[in-house]
Amino acid sequence: MYSRPAARLIGTFARRSFTSQARNNGRQQYQWSRARWNYGSAAGTGVAAITLSGGIAFVLHASTAPQDKKLATPSKVDYNEVRKSVAALLDDANFDDGSYGPLFVRLGWHASGTYSHLDSTGGSNGGCMRFEPESGWGANKGLHLARERLEAVYRAHPGLTYADLYTLAAVVAIEEMGGPQIKWRPGRNDHKDGKKSPADGRLPDAAQGAQHIRDIFYRMGFNDQEIVALIGAHSLGRCHTDRSGYDGPWTFAPTTFSNEFFRLLLEEKWNLRRWNGPKQYEDTKTKTLMMLPADMALIEDPEFRKYVVVYAKDGDKFAKDFASAFEKLLELGIDFKTTDGSTHGKNESLWKRIFG
Image (cartoon, rainbow, N blue to C red; front, side, top):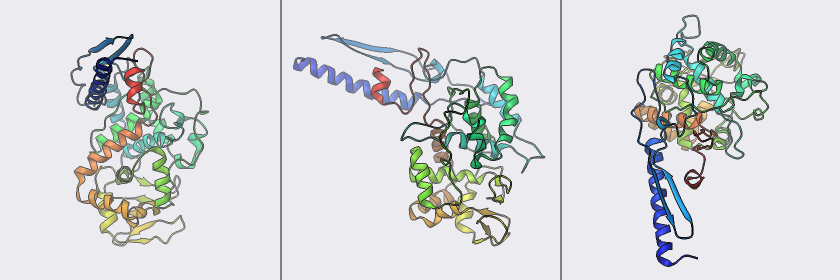
């Protein structure tokens, strides 16, 4: 259809376009804010275009950083102020170990962990956690306490969505408890009811083993390394008999982000707890710590175990890998709106991002 020189020109430009867009996406796409610091300076915006014989035109936006509002939903919400508001709610001497932080992490985790890449349903978009049937799932028992705690933040920031609030609260909690900075961006919408919630059963069952863990996390699109990193969130918080049925903390410092979950899992001796409750394990030394059957599966399965060993030895690597996996978790299935009403989500093909 085209002469050979023209065909070569088209091919060369297309390859350069793809390379340029991929480079820009990797460098600029995932910017974030934190209460103690502001957004970096906005990247310049440019457009590269060429029209070839035959009427074919290629157009590229040179910048897709949230600062130029290409990826973030236009909003008057000051997310630095939202972060401050969430951080102010964390400490409470009358709650658990003195902090709502671990519960906020669980809220953001469970709001996002329903996603399936098989049919693109579930995930944090819509904020369906606050509606039946999702709010009543057994796996979400007790999370109403976190939602109620955050209600004041929602009311104080007009334009803020519950879906953004629940995920950002988890990020703030992790960072305030000594964890890594996690890239986060706004753009999730709220549904008016829970009709778009998936069927129950998509969240992990603590009583199950390695195959169940893989079934749950592979459905979301995670690999074995990411699975182990995410489960490392068990360094935070504790179980409650009136929620999950299980009882006790995983570590001696349940409000501090660390790799202690992995170290204790490997180095301590764990026996079945004799009690009137579901199967769980306790450490033989103090009998105050616990592990779930799903936790023990991480050291029983050879592929999972090798990552447990790595993270037990290297807390910095764990923090880095966790931040990456947790960012991915919170963005599963989200299409972030652009200023022209189109969408550019992480799950789109590069061709669609460039050519629409």
